[in-house]
Length: 311
Ligand SMILES: *[C@@H]1O[C@H](CO)[C@@H](O)[C@H](O)[C@H]1NC(C)=O
Ligand SMILES: *[C@@H]1O[C@H](CO)[C@@H](O)[C@H](O)[C@H]1NC(C)=O
Ligand SMILES: *[C@@H]1O[C@H](CO)[C@@H](O)[C@H](O)[C@H]1NC(C)=O
Image (cartoon, rainbow, N blue to C red; front, side, top):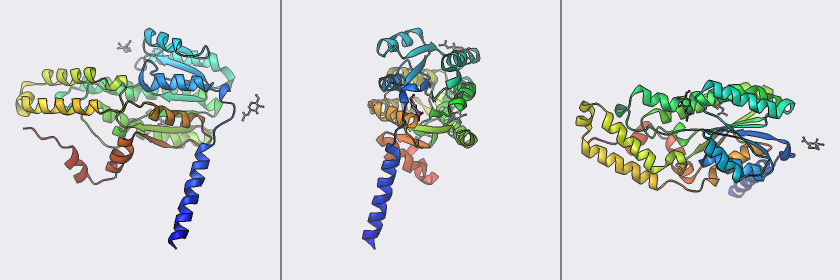
């Protein structure tokens, strides 16, 4: 009986391993557009896919980011400047891509550009602080996706969105988790809408990784700024001691971030090059072993682990 079960499990495992190991032919014909290639996951993925022979169209926020990337890649890779919060910039990038790919269409779109500051307890923030993050991480992603979809449909291609484990468990106040929940919820609707067109969509959910977005100094500076500009009443209620403990806690968390960005870009590469891409990829041990299980726990458990009380 047990043996039978074990054999069945083994066969399922083997089947899944085989299914997900199948890679597409003709990768070198395919165009992939990636946002946020100045640093972090975007830059690494651009170089990785370029090495595999795909035709990478890399969008960077800054000229300097684009120049640096070009130096490290082959002449196949082309760059453009894109500010995802600016509608004209997005539509001109879409036009640039259209001119390059023409009838062949765009094989892959990777929505990677993202920001994580300002993040702090909700009461230390203003509506504008939320807006800053939502503009990039949610509305920017929607705008880029809508502009590129006609090109992707033409190639029966793929959309890969970078969400976060914060799209499963809310780990902090501010717009960051909101934006990632938004990306997750849109993804499910788009995935179903695109199946009839032969377009596949995947979400990547990384845990904590050391990217430009999680640069400790920049992040901590923002926490401090939010605290200092919050109303007197709020500062008095929480108290300086709470702020200091919160700040130290964040600093400690940031120092433990995973530096192995490959874990994430390998998921992205699989989503773009496998015959059967997965719907969701969780990347990093913290995501797999802690946050994902936590997302299935009752609220009391999650609350117990995540509550911070004023001192
Ligand atoms: C791959 O490219 C070759 C030559 O260009 C072509 O004959 C073949 O049909 C292509 N295969 C696929 C799956 O597109
Ligand atoms: C991006 O565009 C927005 C809206 O047009 C603008 O406010 C912002 O300064 C731009 N960012 C950069 C880095 O150019
Ligand atoms: C990606 O995000 C955009 C905007 O949130 C959404 O329209 C789309 O459905 C998402 N796709 C995937 C695969 O997550």
